[in-house]
Image 1 (cartoon, rainbow, N blue to C red):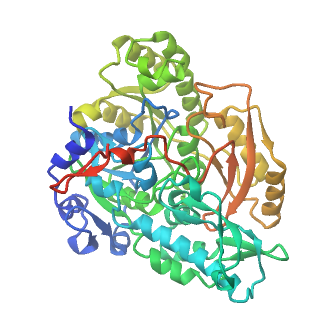
Image 2: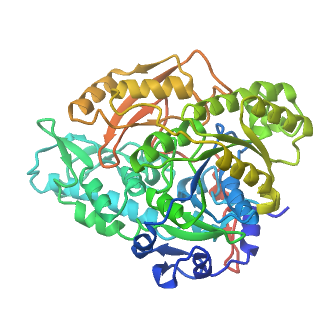
Image 3: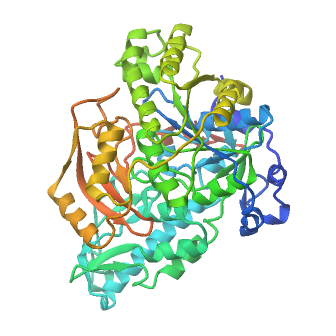
Length: 556
């Protein structure tokens, strides 16, 4: 059996100008990064912004397990399948983070015969967007520390610096550090921290900005520290905004690549859904809606994280109205949620499936709270049995959900035709009455409690004393009307990663809260979630290499 990277390397890619041509994009509207990647210039948006919008389909999933769910694979395969049934489709995805590519995941371009290409480029440096975000972030950090060193005219309290440096790598040793050691000219000694680039506020800002003007305005609002009087100090106060915008002026332009079957893919932005908002850029999504009949996008991790943030943050902020949701599960993952051991997932086990399907049930219920129609799909494995598939089909249909088996990993677009037809049928026959879960007018505590109770199934929320103080401060500063971005582990509906299935009788523990004023949301850290992940005992990096011929191996 060929690996994902072997399939990707054998693919016959079309020149990106030809892929763009299928969407009516002219060659002089592209900014080329070689033959197979391009950024869309601002001219494209100016020309198409008056077009009617296509339909917006969100792909989400049950909670991730070591068995895998195949959310990106399904998204890509569904896009390819739409082309098979003569629907003009665009796939809108996030860019992968380097950290997980070298950590657990080993890549994030889909899988099998449902991938976006060039796969190696995407998983590594791509068009440099993440480097630009990292540079802008760290420029702000450097200007902040330099201001303190050079006389501190803004009276910044070094004990109340909240801006963190970032790096697009899983590096646990950088979570808590001390900077400024050495002599007097080496800066003010203080505790500092790193987050992974995809958890940075600048990543969130880039993904939520409408254009460069909006980007610049949002960057200026970033709160970097507080002064000795307790008042916020912003990027504008440090006169950092213009230089940061200069670093990001190209990064804000959406990237165009293709699937293995040449379906156009706008891949842009990449915030983590467990510690950021988990969606691709507003610009890419809106551009795709103007260029196609159906846009298929995804949100990170399970529906309790990615879908919730897609609905309550991205759609709320950008005025988007999703028309349908595809909820991805696998037989293997549901059995794992039901208590089956990882080594036994290939065996038929209806008892484990009956227990684990409670996780799928909760996600169906959650999406229904937004009044958006749901199609459940099973990402098929050869070890799945007819009895297991039939049980899940009946379970979904009893709850008013459409159901389709997906075989896109093995067969590409051809294996997704059944799913594509179900999605089209849903778009044509079922009405979306989308609305966010909560109103802006609720207090921040009430918003956190609403998500925790309604989406996670918690009994209540325990706010640590520090979090209570931070919430009061944030509210007093005038940010109480913002949506909340819940930072929670992805493996469980609860804040305890070990509680699988559909946990009951638990509270959500909020230990820290901070405002991302530029992005326009308030982040609540729950449980043991970290904004700088670590590497596993055996990182994926150990298996990645380059052959004598220059071909990359080991990217999954």
